[in-house]
Structures are given as C-alpha cells and as structure tokens.
Length: 146
Image (cartoon, rainbow, N blue to C red):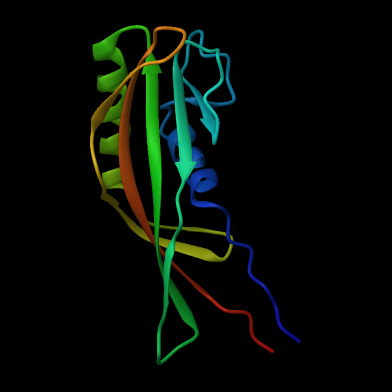
C-alpha cells in the first residue's frame, strides 16, 4: 500500500512565512496591516499582497526516493503610493531570501532564490500601484512507500 505525503502548494507555505514574519495577515482587511491573498487580486483592500503559484520543475533522485522540486511563485504588492508598494516588496524579498531550511507537512524547504524582477506592473482599476517579483522555492519530499 502506498502512503501519500501531504505537500501544499508553495503559496500556502509562503503565506505562513510572511504572516509569521509579521509582513501581513491572511485575507485581512488591509486597513492597518497588509492583507495576504492567494491567486486573486480583490478590489479591496488598499494594502495588498497577492501570491501566485507557477508550474514546478520536479526532478527525482536516481539513488533515493527523494523528489527535488524548484517551485516558482510570484509576489505582487499593491498600494495607492508607488514607493510604499515597492518598499513592501523589498521587505518581503529580504524575509524570503533570508529564510533557510524549514519543514511543512511532507516537504522540506531548503532555500528560496530570486527569480525575475522586481518590475512595475502599472496601476490597477482602483489606481493602486503594483510591484511584482518572482522567486523559486527549493524543496524536497519523499515518495510514499509500501
């Protein structure tokens, strides 16, 4: 019988890292703290961080049952002030790039590396400025065994 390990989408684990670092709150109001959302940019709140998953690049070790995965994800910050949105993205970047080994469920995160960006994505419909940065989470997990 095979046992499947639970491995979250990377954005769920990154959300928890950001909440733990006091960079925002999950699905918050965005009034006094930055609200963190996954996969969607809601019309509100004003202070907003949105995380997006991309296709991961798995590679299985030939000598073990360990699967190594490079899982890219995107972080977007939105704020009415151009520089405030940029500065928040830089704070998040610092938190993520300093984060080393941690485990969540069946996954062991080794590190996070910088992807593309930062780049400006223009204002949204509510005239909030959007800054974007991609990252790559390096994690590993073992396949289920009999």
